[in-house]
Image (cartoon, rainbow, N blue to C red; front, side, top):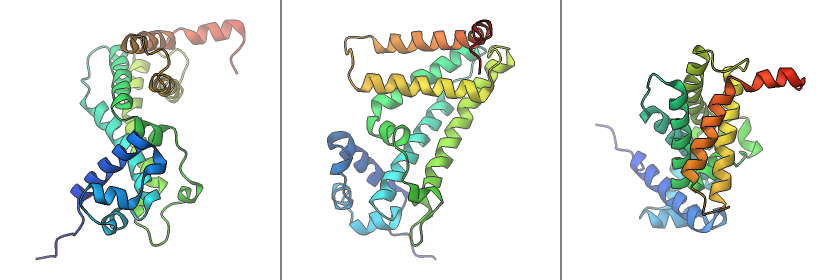
Length: 219
């Protein structure tokens, strides 16, 4: 019988949760290997074994954010109205950003260090590279593209490609989330703002490019 792993996926999940709480409460500068180890009742060795370093822990948080988005998309029902389904995906993104502002900032608004761009670093677990974040991001993005592609099947993307429409959809998600989380106009009914914005976006997918052709602004 093999020897059980000293640090398993449950320890990893607990460490990620502790790191997220720390960043959300006090900012990234407050994060430390010793701090998250203490918060979870384990040792710094567990952090280094599972994530390689503090940077590796932050990278894993970035991947975790995209994993939550993927799981959120997977949990959404698919109806016979692809436009409504896409609006619901946007509202799911809002819930993610509101529930996990630290993960939103790390996953969406933080460029991975250049040192991670070429892959795993010597002596560090493979999970401690931007490849992990990119894989998680691509998995979530593929599900989103499937929802956007359903609009294309009903001739509702104008002359946009699925990739172009997906980029525009994501940009609006990220922009609205950033503005809401900054606390701008807290009296706004933000759920209504999001629903209105994405209702307009989905409707505009089929018509906006026609106006671009008329005004000659198409690149």
